Structure formats: C-alpha cells, structure tokens
Length: 186
View 1 (cartoon, rainbow, N blue to C red):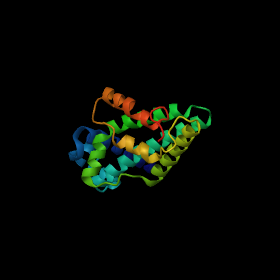
View 2 (tube, rainbow, N blue to C red; view 1 turned 90 degrees about the horizontal axis):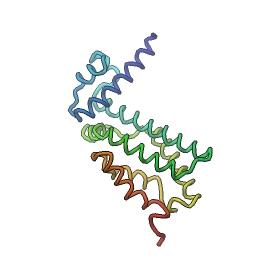
View 3 (cartoon, rainbow, N blue to C red; view 1 turned 120 degrees about the vertical axis):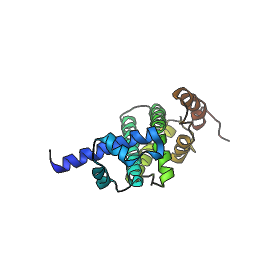
C-alpha cells in the first residue's frame, strides 16, 4: 500500500473512531482513546488533526458531505420522475436519524467551538434541497412560502435526543405545516 493510501485509510479510521467515541463519551472523549479505537498511534492522530477541535470539525464536515450527497441523490431521482414530496419526506427522515446518531458530535462541536459547516457541502446541500422544494411547490404539494431555511429550522428543532418513535411522531405532527394540505394561505 502506498504511503498516501495508508494516510487516507488512517484518516478515515480516525474519523470513524472519533465519531464513535464522541457519541459514547461526549466532548470528554480523549484523543488517546480515539487513537486507540482507531488502531493508530497518538502521533498519527495528531499529524492528521492537531487538536480535538480540528478533529470534531472534520467529523461534522464529513456528516455534512453525506447530507449533501443524499440531497443531491434525491434531487436526481426527482429529475428522473420521482415524486418531490416523497423524496423530501424521506430526506428529512434520513437527516433526522443521522442527526440523532451524531447529536453527541454536534454537542461536542458547540462545547469545543468547532466550525460546523463545510462550506462546499453546505452549498451543495442547500442547492439540492432548494431544487426539491421548487419541484414540490410546482406540483402544488409544498406551501409556496417554504424555504430551505424552514427545513433547517425543522431539523434543528427536532427532538433528536428522543427515541425513534418519538421523532417519527414529532415529524408526523410538524411536517404537514409545510405542505399545502397542512395549512391554509392567509
């Protein structure tokens, strides 16, 4: 294996271990424990991430990249003929579940002051969600005043610290407020 491939593999192992350790132990997860969980030397961890803030920022950026990929895939399915509301609903459900899984990482980021946005991923996610919203609005299913920021508000106010059944019930109660069937113009 080339040194570059080994470095890429080690970086991914560190990110995976950091996500797991921070989910289990919160912001107090130690760099030594993260390195051990990744199966790398502490020096290797610090070569990739000089401090915990950089590590948490990278974990969150990776999460945002996955969200952007997912939103773009949903947008592609809509462009190929899938129902926009079905895709939006499924995307919101997946993002809520991923947010619940990574809640500890996000809490650690707030505690450590880590940046929470990977700008290119944020731009990609916004553009894809905006296209999904426009498609659902053209179909008459999504209220005309709904924006990407409304979906961010929906996600940020979700009860991600609650069990899956509670999150599903919350979504059933709240999501219709974005649709044309859930409220009236006025």
